[in-house]
Length: 365
Ligand code: F6P
Image 1 (cartoon, rainbow, N blue to C red):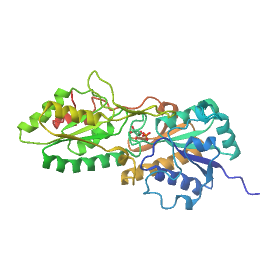
Image 2 (cartoon, helix red, strand yellow):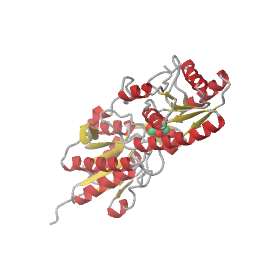
Image 3 (tube, rainbow, N blue to C red):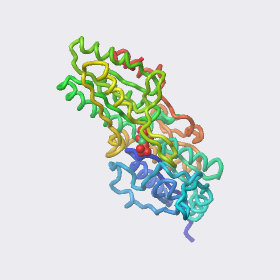
Image 4 (tube, rainbow, N blue to C red):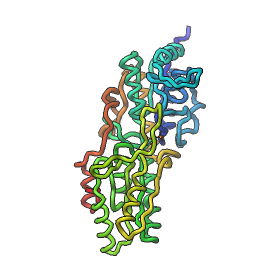
């Protein structure tokens, strides 16, 4: 009698990110090559609650390596431990759906689950492991690069490349109009995208959540440049940047999401303040979801592929409740519980900040 094949499942959770499909492809191919079966869970944890799983084969992942988004769909709203359910009277209540998740994993005889996600999804994965005994392997996804226990998340390189290209384009228009051009980039409570793209794109000012800024310092830098004959300046502002003694700018409150608030609006605030306090025109561009959409860079394709293979390999050898991680250019595993802890911010005394300071970049302090 033919031996029963081992079965695994893979899901993508949270905001989408370049490289998700490359990870899915690597996970699926590795399982298939090792004579296992693999199911794709549709729309993140929603699919585990609502029994939305599909058997994957080589055809399911053919041609997806360079494609942005995720063929499995994703959501940053559905947490099985606090799942929104609409009652007959239209009222939304939040229920614990862990039993549904466990029932579906049993139904498909899934041995372990690969969770490709940022801190919200990895936290849910860690909770499933801790409280329900589900075997989980995490893959660190986010353009924000703000996960602890890994030197790099996939998607960051692509976001940084997009922001750098935007800065190159803003330079030419800033120079032509003698303006201050502000680019607001994503990153939540960490300034990785702003810092790296700011250095790569030759910014004059970089404002990060980690270094509360003084507007006077920003104005001083712009005026100094003007006196030196530079009639334009480029400012990169992380969405989580805030003035000294002030608050972060909140764009909206998202009900039922893992993450209740979305940041945004600080770039426009800085532009208005520059115009009010100087005679120089200032304009703000919010790069937004362009940082997340589209094809991953070659670096992200390689990293995503390495992560995907490593996650499937961890499952194959029965090493569970870990996250794959990049450490000294090697893929290693770390406890998922540790990886799902506090977001990783830019250390203010890091070499890259010092590099920026040596170049004369103003960090607003
Ligand atoms: O975490 C990735 C990210 O793109 C953040 O940089 C940004 O603040 C947030 O997601 C936006 O989330 P949403 O897709 O819910 O608008």
